[in-house]
Structure formats: structure tokens, C-alpha cells
Figure 1 (cartoon, rainbow, N blue to C red):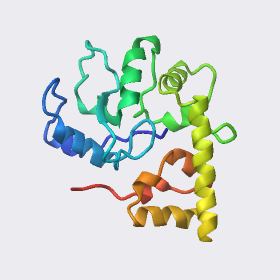
Figure 2: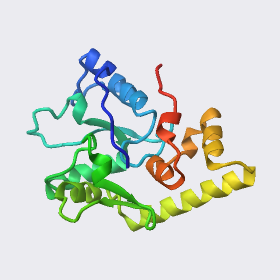
Figure 3: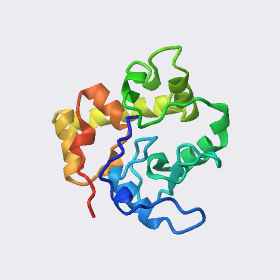
Figure 4: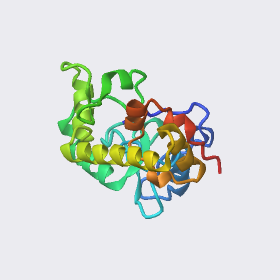
Length: 200
């Protein structure tokens, strides 16, 4: 998982849009999709047409005053939204995905293909890893298979990994890009900045 950047010039802020409980949040959903370049904030997989795109309240507590505001809202795959909300109270305190030191505190383990807290005493980072299952063995295996497949495809094309990722992006095959930070750490490619912003 990578740090989530909230834009001070966001159209969501400019239009003063907040989440409307049981209301029409289609514009908010579209703007979050655009800002996140179409990727789930937590799984780093593309949110395709067949995916249920949930607006996740990172802090889902009903008594959290800023619950429905921009800084607390992320677009995610439905399963992650539901599971996180159900377990929220059991994982406190928790590191925010927007923390400036996020990628220093939640690091990628290249050998195990998992994300983990850098230090054993960082309770906030540990809780984030556990609530989002960033160290889950099944996800670890999925990352391993995915990264291996990416490397094999690049080799089959006879091009470098950088060129292969460029090709996927150029041909708009975003659905074939997953685990962005893992790709960046494994192959030293700045994938996120290669993906164009969605401005429509």
C-alpha cells in the first residue's frame, strides 16, 4: 500500500462536497475515482466496470465529527470497506493513509511480499497493517504470482519491465496493473507518476 495524497486543490474541496448518508454520492465517487487514478486506495488494484466501488470512511465511527469530509474519504473495493468498518474498534490507534511518514512506517518486505510496520513498537502502523490485511499470507502469494507473471510477460515481449509497464499504460490496460507500490519497490519503477491523471 502506498501513501494516499489528498489534493489541496481537489474539486471535492472546491465544490464543498461531503458524503451524504443514504443520498446521491455519484459525483463524489467519480471525483475520488479520478483523484485515485482509478485504483483502490487499499488494494492498489484497478476499480473496473464490474467492481463495486465503495466510498470508504477511513474512520467509520458515527461520533467522528469529520466522518463525511474529504480527508476521511477514500474509494475502495467493497470487501475492504466492509471488513475494515466491522473491525475498526479493535484496531486503535491507527495510522492514517495520508500521514506524511506513511511509507517510512509501513514498509514493503521484498522477501515475503508483504507490508509491515518498520518498528515493533509502532502500534499505529501495526494496527493499519492488520486491519487492512496487508500482511495476509493469501495476499502475499497473490503478490508473488502477480510480480512473477509481470516479469515473465516483459521477458516474453523481449522488453524491460519499465517498457512493459509503459506499454500497459499507453494501451490503457490499467486493469492489468496491481500492487503498485510492490512493482515500484521490486523493479524501481515510478509507476504511480507514469499513470495519467483522470481529468474528465
